[in-house]
Image (tube, rainbow, N blue to C red; front, side, top):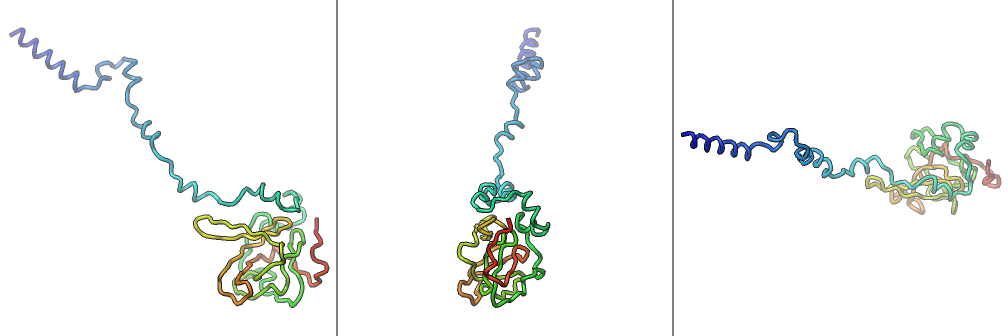
Length: 210
C-alpha cells in the first residue's frame, strides 16, 4: 500500500510539472524571467507602419528654400514684410487666396495696359490677355513670355498647377486647362487681384520696387 501511494504521488507531481508553467515551479529563477515570452512587445515590433496618414498630411510641394533660389529677386522675408501690406504678404509670400468676387481686377476690362506683379513690379499680363470667365477672380488666357512659372502639384491625385512670378516667386494663383473657354489657348490663369498692380502705360511696367 505504501509503495502504491508513493507511485501515485510521484505520478501526480510529474503531471503537474507537465501542465504548469515553468515560472510557477521556479518563481525566483533568473533564467525563467529572461526567457519568458514577451508577446506584447513582439506584436508591437511586428506591426506594420501605416503610410496613409503620413501621406494625407504631407505635401508634394518642392522644398521652397531651394526653389526660391531660382528667382532673381532674393529679398528676405523681413524685406518683403517691409514693402507688402499684410494681405499682400499672405497671398504673395504665403500662397493664400482672396475671396472670390472681391478682387479689384475681377471685373476690370481695360483695352490697353499691363498687369504687373504687386511684389516686384515685373510685367506679367497684358490687358488683351484678360477675359471674362465668371469664376470670381481675374482670368487671363496667356501671359507675357517668360513672366510666369508653373509648378505642378499632384497631391491626393488632383492636378493643380500653381503659377508664380518668374522674377520674385510671388504666388499669383493657378492655371487650368481644357475648360472650353473660347480663347486662343483654352487656358485660364486664375489670379488673385492682390498679386497684381495695373498700369495703363506699358512703358512704366517692369521697374522693380526693390
